[in-house]
Length: 456
Image 1 (spheres, rainbow, N blue to C red):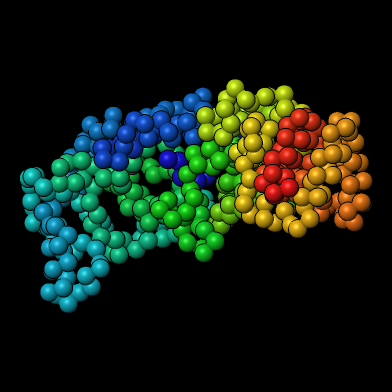
Image 2 (image 1 turned 135 degrees about the vertical axis):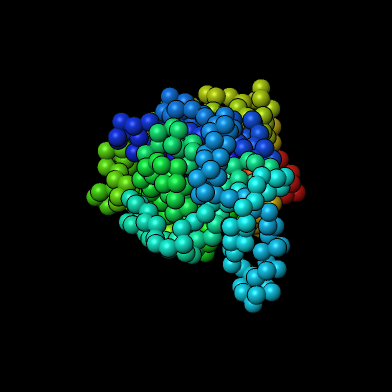
């Protein structure tokens, strides 16, 4: 799964690489076997490609596990220079000691093994010896120069008891070996930056420039969570969002182009975006606004391109009609009309299902709302008029207007039962154009079926 927050970070890295003539590196952090599978990696690559960032836009994918020997060398060097040490304390031990000494159990490691001179042994972790004094200043393009007091940082683990490196150490070593000089990531990693900067310095390397983009939050101002919120790029893709709409919207989370514009092509974003203009305030991921963006992008497509984009939904094995009953010509005839009405490509199915089904699927609520007392008489007269009418949208409308006038009703009221009888719903494509495409015989058959259901 590609989280929308990770997608936003991807776009920021990608756009800066394009602007600077640099190279964006895609690295898969696969050292935790329980959280990594080939199909998950492929899913990320597919989601990136859907966004427009295919394999020709980055170097990689590179896999963190391939650099395990460098991680080990770095750990050994830090141990040899006294900047790291072995520790045998379990978390429970630290909590117990703090409790016995009247301290706060929520505080971090207490430095118990710092000067015990322990050697390697099974289950002994390796901790980095943080400086006791001074401050670590992080040069951050978005947040300025946040300073962190070293005395408030615990001696953090850089290798687990089985010898495997943790995220902090592995990322530093990988970035150094790959020549990374700019790291753009989410704000949640800001607390890791001073620790990683200390590791860079301890290994005799120059730390990269950092840029911590604002976190994405939901309508309750809570950080987006995959357990609670819709966050998977793949889900938005499968629902019918356009990649260009998603790119545009994500780029506006924490930054704005000139001229009070919002709908902006990618080429303009590449020209105008400035990393230093990104806000540090949390950004609201508003799905309603994203959907409105998507509608704007759908309407901007040519009719031919719109039809092509809809094809995967219309020819899917999930549609309610039989594959052989689908007629692309029917969709082409009405594509321009549905294009102005939908905000998701997946919605085209509900607009066209009644064309390709033997019988419309009636929504019970729509039926009850439209089929009032006296409706049978109205439908019977509509049926009679349509049996001999010239089968064109304007003539079909004229017939209904004449019938409606005889019954003393408004046209809008008379259309509702006709629409429900023929399409199954109270809303949809323009009614008379739909009837023209559906054809006389099928329209009359559905009117007769509605009359039979009404007992008339």
